[in-house]
Image 1 (cartoon, helix red, strand yellow):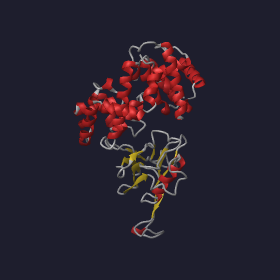
Image 2 (cartoon, one colour):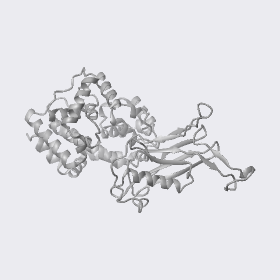
Image 3 (cartoon, one colour):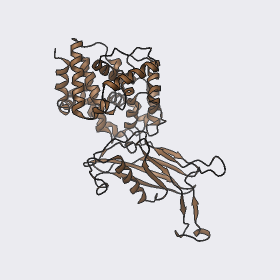
Image 4 (cartoon, helix red, strand yellow):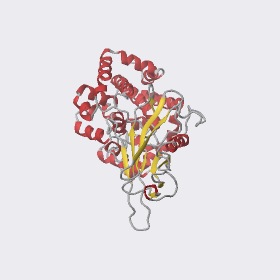
Length: 417
């Protein structure tokens, strides 16, 4: 039997080739062909849930095979989407649901409404929206990548104006230092520039929030009346429009990508609908299939492949503790026993501190360092396990060896971190 380290290296050394071989398998090829031929006909949540073959394919693509039966829960995930931080998917302590909601969002948008002042003398509250995720360190817009979304604001009871934001190699030309490494500050500046060149000039502002996410907010303005000039009477009279109040709204909606573009996720503008996301879903399906098959022969290989896929998204030790499979990899490398099912918040905090001391999570953004870590895990796994491990599926279902109390503790601790 081939050992874990060798098996992992054989797959990981040329992952695209490994995925291509998986895609060529007759059973897999038939499922891919069916999905890509029929997903364009899916226009609603009911359409997706009503085609069991498409639905099962989609669930497998995002590692949710064990939840296929839970159509009521998945309907709620799909109907609320992921654009709002308060949506059902984003409230779950499992990012598989958020990823699923984004891929099958059916063009849902997110809206905020301004509020009137609570008391005389106070300003009305502006309508504002912040992206539900932080921007990455850099983005590559040098090729076919694009972020595209509609920003719309109701200025008063009868006037609504909008602009479609498009960030790609052409629209960013001359505005960024390096199109292959566009920074969050450059993204915010480019978005703001497109707003200033539109009908929303002076009505909506965009920028970077303190946490590094992209945000939009309505602003106060002067309506210069019918003549569009300062001063005047009657229809030409100027009117001060507050930034807030119930007549000020801010909405961000999906906008289709330009021809031959691929989506970039900057927190807004990736709700492209399942037909435009078909290739991305297929890649996710292939990766899940590859990992699952590897796990049938050797649990350690599946753990290694899964960790390699997820590691670059980790931001803290709590992200590891909240995922049973990631925890098993980390525990193996640093020599910790499995977390007790009766873990308390204090125990989890101590374990998180130990993981932070022993594992440089930030280094996982560097492919070579990540690969070295995963190989180290595979070598240790080989030394500890001379046969394919037993029940692996529970590690990849969002719970694993962690019971409800433990998961709740992890979630609470993560929020407080």
